[in-house]
Length: 479
Image 1: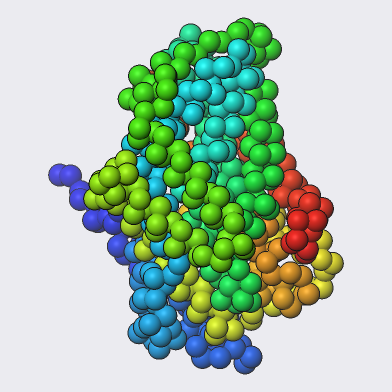
Image 2: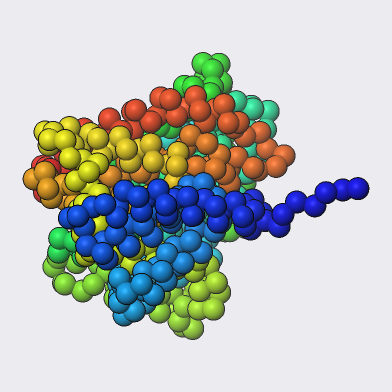
């Protein structure tokens, strides 16, 4: 007789298991929080809800969005969070910016412009090292055309398959490229405000807590240098770690037509009408976003204009219904719910109370920044979602920074940049999982990731700290 196991939620967690987990976390947090005389009742409720959500994100396989929405609902029902505030997060300009950015990205992808640009670069590579760094450069640029790391990874898979087909006899080179794609996609996201949903969460939480907002142009100025340096450095480390000298000496030749065949796009000859329109629109969008201090138009409004043009019958490159089908609505709901949770943490004083306990020891400014960067770099081992990491860490970082006399904006930006490292396990990030599971193509193992992370984790954290202490103050973000 076959025994039947308890039904599971989301394929992994039994109902009784997550109920017990939630109850245990409530009791543990309540035992500490309820004795806090300096914390308001709303603050205690917020901290308990926040702790339960974090425990469920870390220890169960329940959908992250479901947990975030449930936590937000608990805050609304308990009266901690006004209904208008909770639902209002869906109308935040940053949410609209991301929606419209996905529409524009769908138009660019449908035109074949992204595939053409990639084919142009990789077809000029004469060596393995050039191929790796040209691929890295293309992936860095894609942060301005395609929002969110998972979207960029999905579009990059056909390009990788084309390269893997050409280099089928050179297994170590293919494995190196399989690692380069997700590593660079994740590290280069910091180049752009729309590079990851976590960036938009950080911007909104910082604006709500301090009134200071990091716009598209300022984020670009601060993030692009770090993205370029960290991405190319990581790509070189992957190349040296996975391939041998003989692999790197042997020349390579990738034809643009092979990339076009894999992606189904026209990548040779003059630009066609759709590609020209997509190129002009993308250039205008980035220029207007960067020129926000001059014209004063919100990046969300600029993006909305671009989205309408992208889907217009006369000048567009993709129908609106098809473009909207590419928008990850679950991620947007998650963002909105976690922004509401972050608002509750800040307004009720829960973040300040918790930060004072965690960062109560008096340290110097650079030591505090180092601690924030170190914790943010390692946070992916517990919280797989980049957005969840920002929603948990950023309110605490902002509160602790203000109490210690450190710039909240500098600390929050450094934390978000460091949280971009998430390569230790196949499940640490969606791009890593995506390239890990490609069938019929040699790719990396968990041992590859662990070995690479032992080098990249301290290197990435050290690089972010170096930028935070030296370059960013020169660019207008002192710590």
